Image (tube, rainbow, N blue to C red; front, top):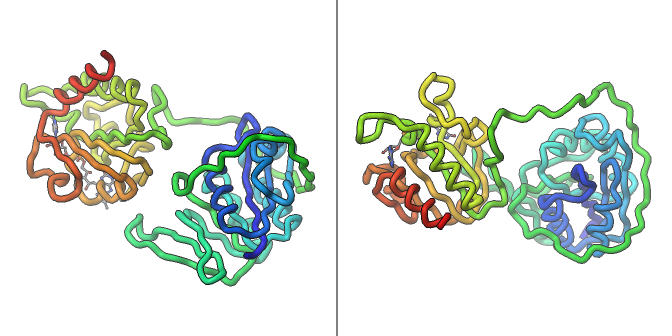
Length: 335
Ligand SMILES: Cc1cc2nc3c(=O)[nH]c(=O)nc-3n(C[C@H](O)[C@H](O)[C@H](O)COP(=O)(O)OP(=O)(O)OC[C@H]3O[C@@H](n4cnc5c(N)ncnc54)[C@H](O)[C@@H]3O)c2cc1C
């Protein structure tokens, strides 16, 4: 197997996030000589965290200039680490930071980059990458002869590396910190509380039905919001929404303030990975259900016995009023 560089940027506390540890495990499983390349303001915590991973060398581009995600500095760091490691295959986690900088680093090295990989394995002695196309409808197995080959691995596709921390010796590598871009702060979407939890066991999805007129002739968006947030707090589930629901705020209808476009699941939304999913007040139309591709066990609550979920798209459909069901579930969870 050819030499491999595992490339990771540190988090604000200097350690590696779960997605990076997953990519590390995938790199180790390939079986080639492994070098680690770290980027960040201070990489010692990360180096100690993965000291026992079996890498021959731990290289780092370190300094304040490399604390913030920024194309110029991240691409320069990735390029310098790849040159120093002499690796022909570079595996890194699929983060927004690497997705922006890695294709540029690959171009500077006359290599190639593949993003959104969901697996990498050795086939006939060469690395082969699995990737989905056309909004997760087609799966392809790719190999490349161009080197260096940069591969960004999606989170949730491999087990995270978990070894004991230890002492590590780190070789510092120089990279250009020149940049015309100054990071002046972080602007996060307006949202009352954290509702997107990629590592949650359950994805709870709310549909437009929560805001529609109910059998008593009135809409109860306020009650809906309390039921949904109560369930999320008690279960620590992640919150998803249908397109119809997240679009409502733009149409002046009663809305759930805990829901933004970032929560949207589906063809034009996200395809998160969770072991279980519960859909409520959502019809289960194909463009929405496409986003459930990686949800293993699916259940739905809908008043309509002919809803889309009942047509083979869910494992269990409860034909019931979601207000009643969730009120009861919350009572059970908090008792
Ligand atoms: C190109 C394209 C891309 C699209 N991309 C996406 C996408 O990414 N994501 C997405 O979600 N959609 C997407 N859509 C839209 C999609 O086709 C549907 O219109 C949308 O998912 C419907 O949302 P909904 O099920 O929440 O709302 P509705 O269709 O209005 O369904 C509401 C449901 O709530 C139920 N309900 C009402 N009250 C209750 C109650 N008290 N208890 C239980 N059930 C109740 C009703 O029976 C109904 O089934 C896309 C469409 C197109 C054409």
